[in-house]
Length: 453
Image (cartoon, rainbow, N blue to C red; front, side, top):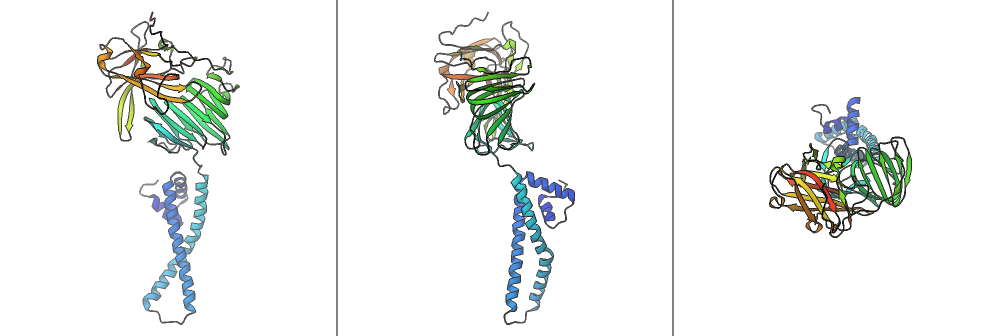
């Protein structure tokens, strides 16, 4: 907008027909993008129409008065009527006609604005919305996600739920990014850039199909319950109910994935692109840090031990409430994307962390979960005080029973037993203690020993 010209001035000059073509184009763009400008135009239109109605009433009154016995009007009344008629016929009546056209145009502009079909129904902690106009806002309940907007779950222990129409929903957790694309006919188009996603989609009026694009493939669904894990060069889709058709972007190969099956899509045209039965879960896991693990958060440093990696915690702003944030320093690893089989927690399972730090500080350990063949089931955490850790600088072995962890969202699941592990992490709060993670293991019941050779 040109300096010194307000929205109100543009609207007034538009109504009296004095805008240049470039200014009119600018105003049309504002009307499309800014609901407050459209509301101002409506208000001005209503005022002008009210004045026009007043003029029509005045004409009718004068006609009726002409049929009545006349009295001699005074000078002031004659002057007022002449001035009023002069202004009315010069401005009000043409303005009323212009307002009629403007109202039609405004209705056309508003009718082109797509009705939002994706909105936030639940949100936890560090999550943001990047609007198509470049603004970054904190997410809130019932906030609409419009075309071009991107929803971001920014932390290893944040999650959110999006309502899709009336029957369907999507859950994002951990470090995840989902963009709402242009809606085509009866198809919902989304782009899932990275992270973990769980969804249940049911057809309804206006939404007969559902397409998700990832960096490696395009997934078409109709009625399905599924989970999706993706990163820059890899996508894994598990369909738990319904069917999906997956197209590999590299060569346009297509494969149908049925209930109980999964498919992996990598940037490797030589790999066979077909679905397989979902593997049975296992109850043990060890991050292969020296073989290229899926690190969601953390900086890889040179290793100083032959059998240990060295991943330093990265800073992460954390929202406590709308007006307060704290800084976390965290390492997060994806279990689901680094394991070929689901990793199941059983009664008696333990988690073993190998960590070190430069300065004594409380360390928070945690993991996120989903139901086997189901949806996201929440996160579990526990704190370990410096006195329980050991001396700074040493690689410390911290073994924790499941009973030590509390649920962040007990409404999702109060206990971790029987759940699949999606992500696992360790962090310090407010203070950068130089935390490093060297290895993490999930150990089945009655097998608490580990061979580190």
